[in-house]
Image (tube, rainbow over all chains, first blue to last red; front, side, top):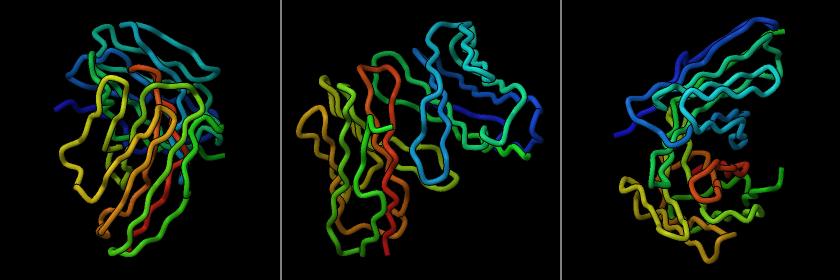
Length: 111
Length: 111
């Protein structure tokens, strides 16, 4: 059974701090996505990474896909209260439509 | 964001009722998904419809019945549900096996 473990599960930080969220698996993924979800809403896609070692930046967010395509990280620089939410990673293996979701990281940024 | 819409947004039903959830995607995608999101659990894939296959999670009870009349519409028919079925039900779509885009979800409460 494929599993995606995210760490940390919970994170409460002050505005302006930096943070990194990790997504790890023993399985190889064809691609991996990161989402942010607000309470009572659906996840919103932030980025998709496909190539091992790939780094993508979205304003203050930096995403990296591991060289072996088994893990990924999300780094936020100078966090703001608007970054508060549940961050989810999701991976998909070759030849399947079955996305595997991580356990989630609940981030709270205090003003 | 109106790429994927879901109705109703909230639903309260008794255990003997029959109801249906509706999902519509306006993105021209060729795959659609139903997920269940419960508190403190990862998103659970229930069903996938694509041009090539229909995928079912074998652990989904038969009281949940999907229907996909075309590539833009997806339904989840519900009957004789249990209180533990209360959750946020999310619909998503994707083009082939690339990034998924989610709807806002239906918050279901079974009394």
